[in-house]
Amino acid sequence: MKTTEIREMAINDLIERIETEKANLLTMKMNHAISPIENTSKIKNSRRNIARMLTVLQQKQSNGEK
Image 1 (cartoon, rainbow, N blue to C red):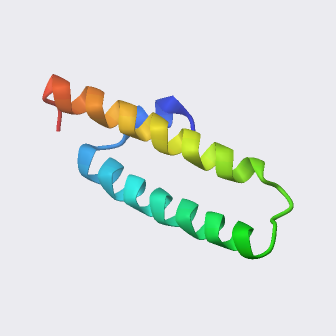
Image 2: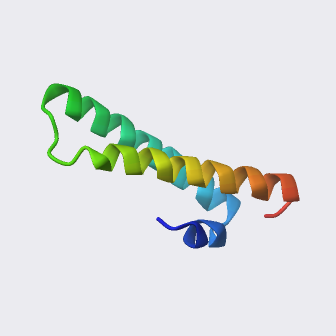
């Protein structure tokens, strides 16, 4: 997910998306521990997307946007 797409999202949508992505990341990590997945870069990309969303959320909250 690109930063421009994240910036267009509303705060409530962003919070929901972060929770969903965190749950998906946890599932991927557990599945990888049981049987290694072929493309481990998905875990890395997921972590980075969560970090991007958290950064944009923090910026929006500090600016007082809705």
